[in-house]
Length: 135
Image (cartoon, rainbow, N blue to C red; front, top):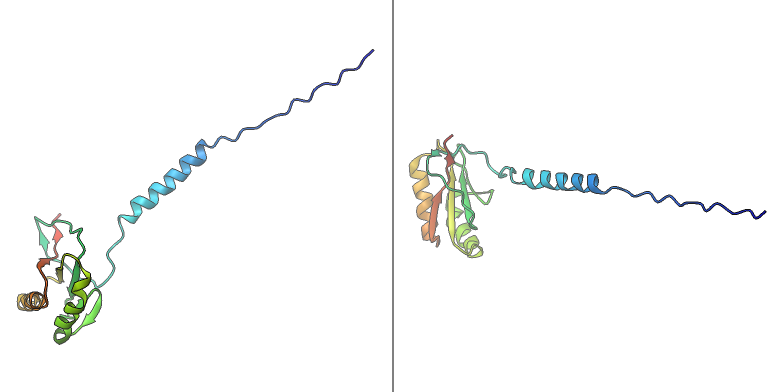
């Protein structure tokens, strides 16, 4: 009698990639969503509230005045005497020549107006005052 060899069936195991792709997309979605909630770093100021606040998405030079009336240009401290020269130095790098003033709500109005005048003299084409939307 002839003995026949039983053919060994090779077992092919398939890896289901669906759960892995689900996890990759969930992690990607998490990073996309959490990156939009990044707080703007810099000097802590309490901005005044406004009903008509709009988000500014254009490139702009930011001047910050904290509650102790210290002036910062792009988060670097600057004296009032050096402010015009600093703006003249930096403004050419901003295509729209927009200056945004972020002043703490306790800063005197006269100081904000003085910084607006200095900005215009230094070549700013547009000025904006930063506010936060009322809730």
